[in-house]
Amino acid sequence: MKKRLSEINLSRGAGIAIMIALIILALMLGCLRWLMPEYIKVAKAFKNGAYGDGFSISTDLSKLGETAWNMAALAEQAIGETDNVKAVRQARKALDSAETINEKHAAYTALTYASDRLYAEAVDDERLGETQAKLIKQCYTDIHSRILTIQGDKYNELAAEYNKKVNKFPARYIGLLVGVKKAELFE
Image (cartoon, rainbow, N blue to C red; front, top):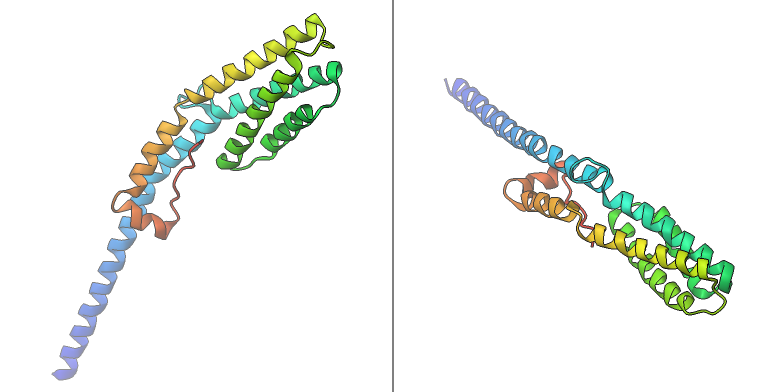
């Protein structure tokens, strides 16, 4: 009889352990099922825009990089390869090779700063022809237009909203177990 009771207690213990494991598994899967679509939405917003229309930070960064490169080429034709021309080219290469959103933001900051310095150097240079001056000014205007567009992009709002969800219970703790990450902000 004692043997039978210990077998029943073992069965209950095993049953409880299995039940706890199933509850934990269900929470983990539920967390993934709830957060993964949100994470994908945020990741897509950086590349394709908040509305999936292609108006995105990624697109604007690419266009900004091209415009800054063109401004550097125009300036180099007129005033030579100055330190500011080199800085714009270096920052553009850093932007092209950046993989994470934080790296892209750092390169973007360096590129906009280098573009401002190059424009300040080139705009008043007497070696600049009238057409070159107009083109450089147009490049500079386009760069700042992209900066304003990036500042108004909805990506950071989506990422911050997602990050709030990740920080709530149970996602905060279960997310650690299943590898749910916070979204990087573009800042």
